[in-house]
Length: 276
Length: 276
Image (tube, rainbow over all chains, first blue to last red; front, side):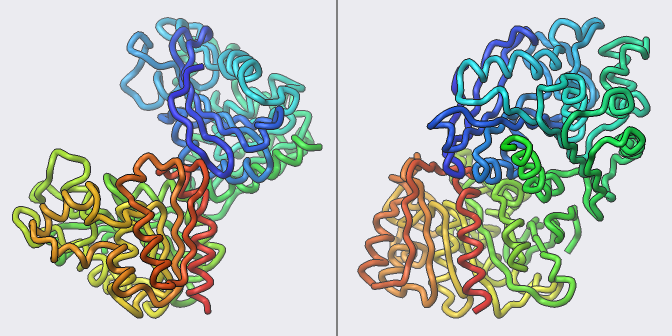
């Protein structure tokens, strides 16, 4: 772990670190906020997965999460959204390739070599943190925005026992049913749709659900509602009798102004699970 | 006022607007946050002046001020830091020309045509807002960061009765005594140092002070302390017996991680003055 920057922030430290990733076969950069309490021993951790076009930096600077994490004594980790570097395959579109890893392990060329964000976020990065910083691996929760909300929900439902709680801001809820998903899954996973279902939050909700609290916020004025398809996830959760707080927030859009508005709620929601 | 964007944010609206500026003889863009209360009538306003290299956007997205302004029912205005456009004189250095207006009216060529940020922030923009949005011109306060802290302090002391309170984050405190000032004042105002004193917070503090509360935060780990010269302002304020909260914050640097950490304090500080 090479330190790129460290800034004091709400009594803790907001750092940016780089490391050689085995999963992604390239150098990866991530943001990590450690609250003051981490000086005295391991603290719980909340993962924040970002959306399309983002790096590790967007949420770290714009989501306003550190203040609430500091108040609760919780660490925050902000992974990047795809592998990086000149050797890494890319596409001209903003929603495929770099910045658009979709939190899965690609099986198709030219993506399979580096696009292994599932392994990176589920295994490699948690192990790196556990070995190097004062976080308590038994107390993890996860959230994310848009594509990152998709990542948070699919990871949480697929790894039972790993995360105590899951939340999402305007998540992509049903990627197998919309253009934020079908296009990418075809490229990364191939045309055979059976391989896609493990990465669709609505299908996972119908099949498995989540053994813990779930909080989902989406703006009623979100300009991407047709791509996010919140209705499929809401239906699946209700059908399953999944304990869930599903909120459509009046007048809010897809931006970080929306995310930051409800960040206090989300961190408090996770804190309750992490400290119970 | 042309609307460039409007996003719902903490119950209010974060907008970005463009207008033809007479003072700067170019189009200017600014950010404006209006809390929910502005729908029912005029609200107090807090001006936030940004630092070197910033536009209207940096603080609007990274300072985390809207949540506290929403809580207090206060509007926020984020002006740009210099005139803009292809016709506007510039310099290769980051600290002269565009992004570095220093909140003064330039008198020297090639700057005098457009670089009139004093008139813009003191007169034109407040008049534009008063004519177009629900703000209460009798209840204004001002803050800023770095070069913007210099702007906030010099405007507040030079316009008695205009602002009820003034605060600053790591302000340039004594520009006539350091390289963040002497270089720019020579370019914008000419080599005659008598013309500079109206734009030096430490000299203004010694000469006039401020008839209201003053709050200044600076990080002890700020990498620009030698350029900011907080000691000159602290000395001048103490010598004058100026009511002031002057705080050196342990371990914090010059970044927005520092600004956002103490934003709650600053907005609460101004709210007390604006609602008294």
